[in-house]
Length: 447
Figure 1 (cartoon, rainbow, N blue to C red):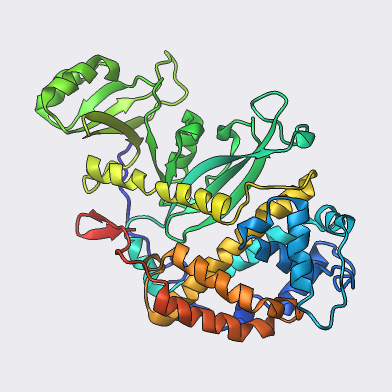
Figure 2 (cartoon, one colour; figure 1 turned 60 degrees about the vertical axis):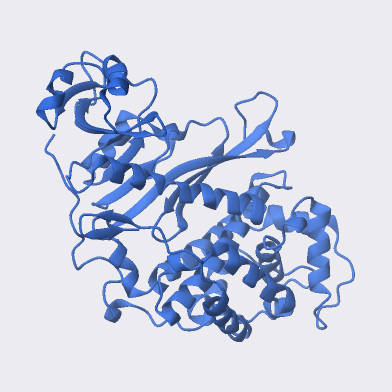
């Protein structure tokens, strides 16, 4: 294989320069009533202003309930939150809310509407980021962490979301998480027993770096990434015993022609702390994957960690590749947030439509928090990575509790003052104490 090295993105990179950026100064510029009406029509939602539980109220109640984990344990808890919020409205005379009314909204409101809102907000969020944000992308167009997480469900939905354990039900969130944007750009919800490798996430975009979890390991995937002109870093699978075909110095030439398993004992005794070699992964006589791949090893706390990559640039030494892969931990933080802070793990619906709504509601809440952070970063001319998501979530929750009624006036314009004040609060109180993590690569930085 021709040894390819990451190159600096050209001037056609999206958001490059102020002239291409939209004016997104108010919440209405990001989401307004016309946007929602268009999504209602697109996804076939009729009678959006139903007096009993309008889609406006239902949508915001589902999203806002994610900000209070105690409201997402059971259907009764969810209803109590709905009812408690609605009685704030003097114009809405509702003193009761039946279980069937909420259940009908969960099963009858197309979940594609919630996904449509998420994608709309995601598009605006990308355009909202400060121009200087892309200074972090000196080598790659974007950096994605690819991983999945399981959520247990009630047994009644086993036919929809079968688990690897018979008699149980679970779903898997397969995510493509942007390390730079700190949000999910692609989500696939599947049965818990479905193999990770079936998740299709590689795009035709060139110069993208994928940090891939072991569950997605496959030679076909590696070939797709290489053919797309992009890059990957993966942990070496324990069952893979690659053949060493090239080394970078004379002292290691005796390793050529051996399998990694044959030299591990020598590595322990050699005193080396890093390994940088070229290998052939497949052991088949007629391998379907014939590419020569770089394998790097790092000795950490008396244990060797091995990674495979198609980045051959000398700027990326073994320790840098190791640190690059460690950025994948951000997707684990994301899973922890949506499961334990936004409580996506407590799903009460027993049909696919309701389950999908309960997944996208906290995702929208997560993205709204990121949008507020991006607005604060743009206004203060800071990087989004300088802000603490945890601190900003607490600020957002406080503002929502004290201004809940604004979300039910069926007018996004009513939220402008609230969001503006919230952005100012985030600027003053939402910054993290430590600097955002970066990796030195030559004389450049990668987020």
